[in-house]
Length: 238
Image 1 (cartoon, helix red, strand yellow):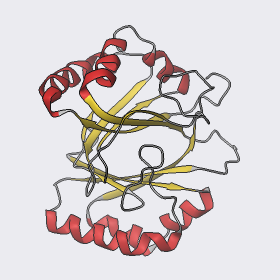
Image 2: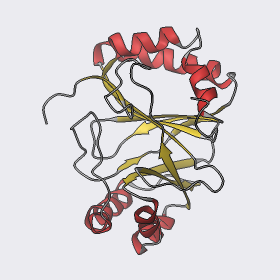
Image 3: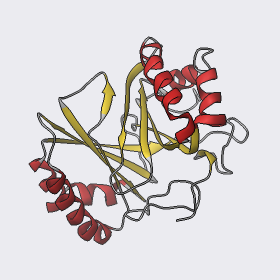
């Protein structure tokens, strides 16, 4: 991992919870928050419901890929991961992204994380109207289909997450709009669009473009062939 630039790193993950084990999972999840926060390089843990999707979102942010890797190998973290993969999760996918280094020339794929911070939650009608507008406008900008498990895709080429639960809490209410792109140029076209400007009705908008981290073959359990994604379990047929 130290061979790649050591920039701020984001774990992008989605999961479903086995209902029989849900109470146990959420109890342990709450307990682990302060443990992760005490680890070297920890920046944030973020989660929330994904609109119009069966998935729940989970994200961890760390100062560098090496420090995220250090937390992965931490003895306090291992039992939690094993229980999640063995019992708690019905399905799970994990990708890792980092900010480009200064002067780094990037191509793709690109992960665009747009955050909207507000003093109060938007109404369900306001969110539905915004999502309808995204459904209509986003395909014209040619985003990548939003893949979850390998070969499985969201109905829409994005995920809208929130209101978020996060530590540390960055605002009274926050949402995330997540999209994938073939190049930074394609993502930047979308970020300059009128529809993106409309997100400001919900609050203060900020965006970051990130590049994919690939693991070496065999480096992680559940890793796919090109090292770009880990996954466990299966969703029920759509």
